[in-house]
Image 1: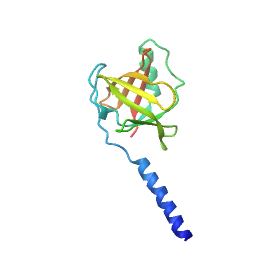
Image 2: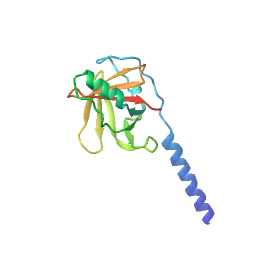
Image 3: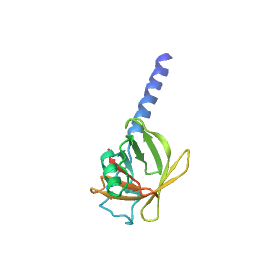
Image 4: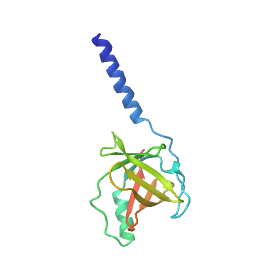
Length: 144
């Protein structure tokens, strides 16, 4: 009896691990400019904060460089779920995301208020530039 319970537990754990690692299909975005029509598929997949590009983009816009930006790993699911991880390995649900209009990304966390960003891509869809309402940039790079 104990062997059956142990086998069931191991099977359940393996199933959870495989389902956590499964990713949605990723569609690379073309180089887009602010205001270009974005498709939801462009954002699907795993993204990492890019401290160097964020710092450069903010400095070029006349803002202070963001040097204390923590490394974050985001996973935008095709279902509209937004997951976050501190390690890049185990992700947990953090909220929902959606595109609004041509190029506005809405991030709605489970706790707190939604944030909106103007989104555009460079480097053939590898880098995602997010500009908030105050003109500050957050740059994410694909980390699949």
